[in-house]
Length: 395
Image (cartoon, rainbow, N blue to C red):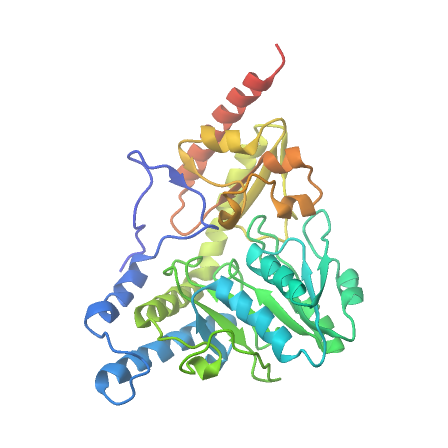
């Protein structure tokens, strides 16, 4: 079955360059999910008949597919409703379980709100929080990170791929520092699965949050990796039935689990070729944008995934630019913060002022992006930027 886009841009539809917000579900994934909605509808927890056995077998097969993409064991994968729930379970679960040892949490100013808001809530509940700044290129200084760890530090949480800039943190080195100090490391990898190789057999990471809908799977399903050796213990945040080894109660949605497993299996099979194609498209897009003039690339120029281009346009307000780009579906930051009028906290952490942050545009490409769409996007940007700069120029 081919990986045809569920809906092609064109014919009145804008070009979709907001893959960091969500991805379309690959048709091959949909095909895998459908039988588990109406035909094989059993509850995976029903252990007394064939309907439940088949559902349980499908769930465990999907669990193994998710584990395989990140170099984990199937038993280390806990199903959740998405990365936000995984982040909550990781941070709250670790701090609560280890409360006798310490109440200190370290995280980074550029994290997703799903981590930052949890961290601030934990501080409200009596935990101590250290929020680290990043360098102007978006990378975390390793020595500053090391110095932030204390004897009472329980957990550090660092995003692998930033959702706004695409910058990739060196979590392998950060994990080694945490191991030296006896601190757990949680990694939000929602934007990383299928974009770069992850090997938890080798990486010293204890907890990792994942989601399906950033990797051509369905919304509403995710997972938390919980290391077994050395054993990581968490306090459950959802109770009632003892599902998922007591860590996350609730009836598992077989079709959603199957969809995430299928999406991650496709990512594993196609990642190398897809990333090579993305690098070509990224360079094509960057070259076209740089020709406009007065453009700044936000985030490290090389330590970033090839799917992301985050740029600021001198003298232009981002909301106005987005409004004028009727032919392109893009964003000025995280989809979770799109209703806010505040400038991006990620770009502010990189040192941009309010005007620069407001003048930024996030263009994220994916599996169904074509070279023609990239070229058309550049043309749209050239026209919009010229029109807006002309309108804002003094008479």
